Image (tube, rainbow, N blue to C red; front, top):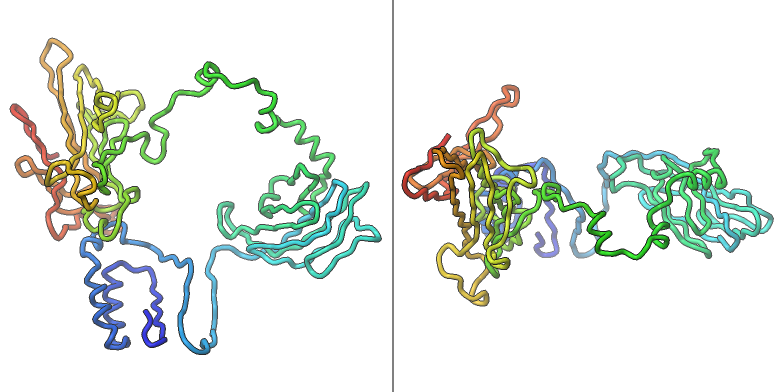
Length: 438
């Protein structure tokens, strides 16, 4: 916030939206009166439904960049602190140049600091220039530099890892200091990098590499031309269960609509806030806790959710329509599910006449048949997650509250009531059957 060249900065600890609202209200007494009305309007724009959403319960706040705007001379900075779980450590790396040529250059360190650079096997014409540069020409025998670096001691996947970049007249390259913990590094243009004190030399290291299987890129030129028959023989069939994070799924939506559903390989319907193309306040209209909502349809008793890849066969109607037909056999009873989406409050108008935020509903039809000549009892279950308190009223399934952890030491659960009632689905069973909750 900026007013008359003055910038107000708010720093807050991990808080939920309700706590943040209370904190801003308390801080308004120190804000100029001309700004209070605008702040209150923004405050009212935070929908109450977000307080009930699991996504709002952040356990931390991240700041990537802070920009302070002001006029005149900036005030003196009293203190700057950086918080990370990484710590400093001192390491030494030997960078040897084994190919003839001009290897004069310099070194740069990211997420670290160069403490000292020293020459390795330098001749009369080689010398260090300044703290991070050198002049070095290689003819017959290899030469190099030893780099003493203050580096980050951190996790292997941390963004704090120390990167060393060497720029020379011959070639430039970069490497992670942490990669030297396992093995030395050999660049195919004649650069050998290892930890200082590692007794392995280039000749011994190349023998170790030669004894190992050749990298796939080196074997490409020797391979015969690829053919369809060979590709079909060597490439395994697609495993629909291993496509992260949901397995294979088909999107279901209307043209020019931002709200979408998806149908998994086993007939499970779901929607996820993380994958929708939300704009403005779209997220406030998605009235379910957490990121995802799933409608699962197991069958039989005990219920089978068909999580293995070949239990359900799927196809699109007439090979091109956005209508998905899923079929499966469960204990001598066949099930056929037909799924599509449509606009809730009107016909499918041309896309140029829509806003994009119209309400979209998913329509599913189940056809159940007995595959035997005898009498059979068919069971079709509806499982909605995340866990909620549900109530069946006629053909409607109503959500009254979400299930949340209770007292931690008791390892129990309780229902947190919603401020309103949320419709999760309607069920038309036709004649001869009815839904009932369990």
